Image 1 (cartoon, helix red, strand yellow):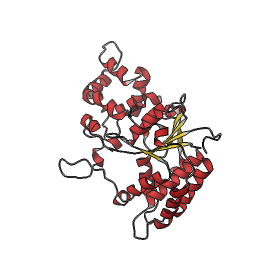
Image 2: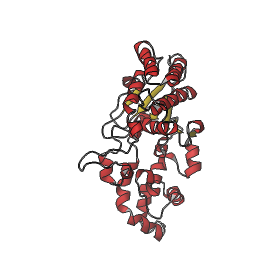
Image 3: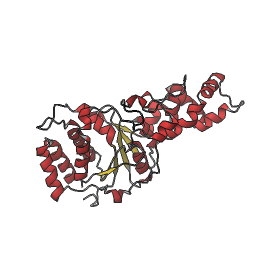
Image 4: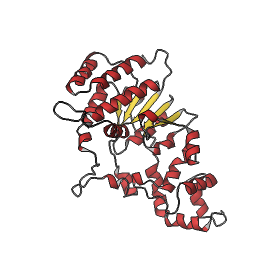
Length: 317
């Protein structure tokens, strides 16, 4: 069991990021006998087995999108994730563009995770990032955040042992993101990363940024003024030394800059279960749950993936 001497460590999965990666990374020719694809399920289970083994997780939370495009974020920036909205009936809730083959697997993903005793947590009107941010900010354990989303770099904190396992280059080339890596790559501290993203913009989330301010100039301004708040204060101070062209660019984007921080910053104070309440501590999968998982392995062609997950939890819990 994880309480038998193994140093405790919390792993937070940005689950949507991972199952999208699994779907696109594992051939969709892997299917159940009736033709239903199971590539995302198998890929995700293999990721979890490897991650929990390689990084010695004792606690695990699969953080979910209960709302992938929260209205309160869209109200602030209407373009937020707008390019990922499927055409829908006017007045109906936004529907994310998700490959049909992945949509079919999402209920099974949740079912298998719960059978494996993995805590699955979402929060109304919030994204998985916000659930991750809340647990990472409250944890008294060292934390590994697994994601392909750079926005979560804002959570990195060496003093609190919060780091990101970044999946953008694939599971075989995971990048361990610490404060040093953030500074070397972006020339800002993790606590400045959200302000940096606001200034630079992010086309993948529909954030326009400030016209004429790119990565280098955003980093340079934050180096000089510390925070976006400090930078905006400088625009209002004629004696601040801020150049006229930059002052003009920031003034032109005043409306965007007033609301963008609330969109980009992950929420850290959600009402979510404690790790104990969520059942986040990893344990060997035994009894009826194990039998059901082994049955699914045969029925759903999940074979080796279930076996590897069972072995990983047996060995490290």
